[in-house]
Length: 447
Image (cartoon, helix red, strand yellow):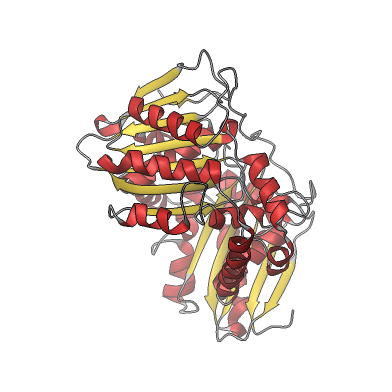
């Protein structure tokens, strides 16, 4: 049975859930005072562990005047606390051969580290110190403003990054999910220190925090380490407080709702490149939609590997592109699905027509038994291989808590994938193909 992750605590501070997982691993979930959620997966025989501090805030949560603050904080939390300088933080992980990093998304932010199991208490203490006690120093902020602008400039020099960013903006329109995760040069230059500080104080608090760890982890010791570190950081850990509920799922917004365009768009972005980058696609499923397993199969058949229809038709048979694939991403209330190719600018229209034709062929007729079997094998193999490291398992725990509301075992995930039929794929393809379609081109075109 999957581990059900309730929105709020179902008992006293010591209430917890526990369930065995594949490969003799064991998952436990506890809610600490303050509403802090702690999830761990003990993996017997491992000498390493990965721990992550997840905050349920992303770029979509930025108020007017705060745009870019979420990404700013990802950088600034490494720049020093009341107890540690930026060098202290860096040395703490380097001294034990560990790795520390962070990632900002549209709906959550994660600060994580991979270390030896004996160094896990240090990693918990340092990351908790960063989350609770970041200084957000004015001079450091101005220095990091320049670093972030360079990061954005680097991304802007990569046309494949540009086309994905522009595609999300075109499909999702004025919806907050349409904004770039890292902000824009204008918003990064404009956001003041006070706005970043306010964003930090509003969103970084016990009830929004999820700590997940996997590997050589003792759950009881982890809970104690997290509680002590947060208390040392000055957070008020109220016994009666409960976790904040996750984002409301299932509000699949149709086109034309909450700023999402009601009609398909075509957008060209000029770049003096030798190759054009193009994406065609539409809105898609939410992150919790039960059909997400069907979408995975659809994606595998259409553009998920070297045997996929896009790769075989556009690259192998016609030689029109080196890279072509399909992709999907889901959020709490909508998602996107797209088909990508990089090709000679003069062949863009031909490549777009071929991608659309393959997509519509999926909607018009069932996939073959061989395609279904191959895609199921690809997905099942990928699921198993993806569970071989502590980082993937740590991330799975965090997303289960913040996004899905349940933690499936590997066998349960495989069962849901294998339950997908050719008819399911065709039905979903017809749904997606009927939605307003957007085309975004980046290359030597007029804007």
